[in-house]
Image 1: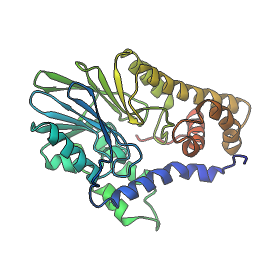
Image 2 (image 1 turned 90 degrees about the vertical axis):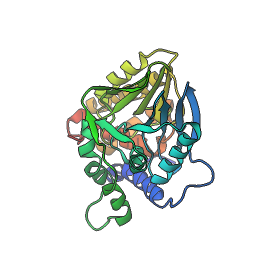
Image 3 (image 1 turned 30 degrees about the horizontal axis):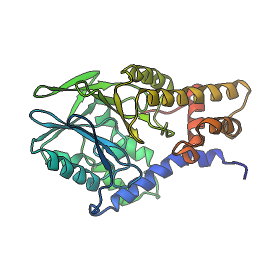
Length: 321
């Protein structure tokens, strides 16, 4: 069957996917007996929680155990998922959870903040996140007019905000163990990368999606490509924990960088041939599918990726400020 989609439909696809996931997370009343994530020790006392498509998680997270405490990276899409992550931390150490890093403001990475605050942790993020985490998620989910899901809106408005912000770089010390937090632009403009140098592990948040098309709704792909160049320079021995998808290496980060570069090139070429909107998307999508059609989320996010990249190249794309 020929692919066909209208401009109005593409503008709502990303919002629909995220809204559906978060609505399911709200409805997750109690933790399931089986974990909604897979825990992998990617370095000495460095754990990645790969969440997959489970609505209690919605994304990946992780934690680092040091000499005198724990740092958690992201808190999933629900309190239920966060509670299960905290329980798994408690199985491995009695040290206090001292810090939580929100890698960016999107709800699937921050909705469980309150669980860790109640456990005594300080939540921190890039300074933009505090002001974006509620209003930008409400905008993302289309919370206006009469079509408001009151339960989902209450979840967004009740998310626990970061208590601490930083500008460019922040070092956290867990005794002798260093956890470095760095701002890198691309996915939202408030993205943090968390590096554990002694383990050669990098938590990228949504700056890296392993073999999956990304959500570009708040993105600036030009700066994102530069960020991915910097990340891949960490070397072939480094392990990368993406925001979505399985664990990766530098070669996988480079492959994701090439997706964004290819997307920009194809859209730019189509614009030069005077294609716009739906016609541009229909022109670009088959070529994009030849190389990336087997990646996760392609059927759902290819059209929004194309049209949002067109908006970026046109200078009309709305991103958080």
